[in-house]
Image (cartoon, rainbow, N blue to C red):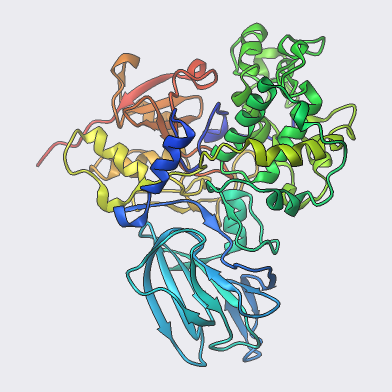
Length: 542
């Protein structure tokens, strides 16, 4: 492995079982499915599963952004993305759960026949140029539910669906938004649900792995190997990553450790490679400040190893005498994971992507596991959803402690994207450029870690600065055993909000979204890095 990026501020941590859009906890798959059945807009909550809004194969005919109008020939701003099916009459599906708030027919002008759906109050989606509509205002819809039929009403040159995502009324680029939040691209696959709980099928696998190489050896895998594969898939689900990511991780684990069956992987070799992905403790795939022996235990945790494979790992190497930045060295380094690989979602060669993460001496060995993974994925999918529901703003309790109310406010933002420098007393905002790792938040409406904290506590009239260490200085220290809901949990360069159940509500890092990390002080990474808890003081009553 080699070092490629520098991160700071809220980006210095990695996670054992982070949940991008979920409050998952330790429940069985059947319990999870029961919870999801009760998770609907009708009970004041909103799902974060998304679906391609076209129920048939399609092509993208126009992207978001400035253009010359095909109707008027004048410059204009295209506020969505256009999807066209070959027949021009594809089912139009709700992109995510919500409530139908507007249906309008403008005839041969503008949108023509169009529908607007509200999701969690501040975000809406629009579907235009329809030929017919199968819902009415007030209807509650779920992700992937048919709401209309593609058409050519309004100002068009041919039949298609014009699809928009708006936040606080401002149109944002659907392709960019969904790629940044979920690693999803509009590739012509009809109706696929991403970041959702639908079981993966052989057809889903074929969409990104049409001709798998190698020999299918899935029937010879042991129960232990299947269990490890399941843990890798579950971790990817909970991170909101698509099946393609799970496949790459499984191919890597098969090559590096035979999915954990090679017991020599549980002890470091001469290069201190260890664990199911053979991650190198010697160069930083561990929690800073711990010995290599201690980190061997951490890297042998399959879910931790999977999370770091997907996301990479931030650490400081200064204490280990590896200072490529000079005498003092920069504050931190980022070992790249899968989501750090440029354009990984659109690259076809899965083995090549695995090699970009692993830097193996045998770069072509990953590909030989494609057939095994293609057969394995539909069998091991747990049905555990990679999303759950967050309470809507109107569900905020008006009773209970101040901290419980703060935690409830923070929970309403689950699924909001991370944005470097984003968030203030008004809610999610565009951030700025750039983080120490070069991440630009200027086009992303969302929160960074301290932005989420200051927003949630501002609801109770508490003003906090937009920086985690400054927030810690303004709070009253709280002993670990006395942590309550709403208390701030501090780590090097990072802060989150205690949920009162042992978890932490946090805005973690670019590419992810506000989530709850359960049992945060007991996991093998966060626990050793915990620097303390603090409780903001409520303002004096006039």
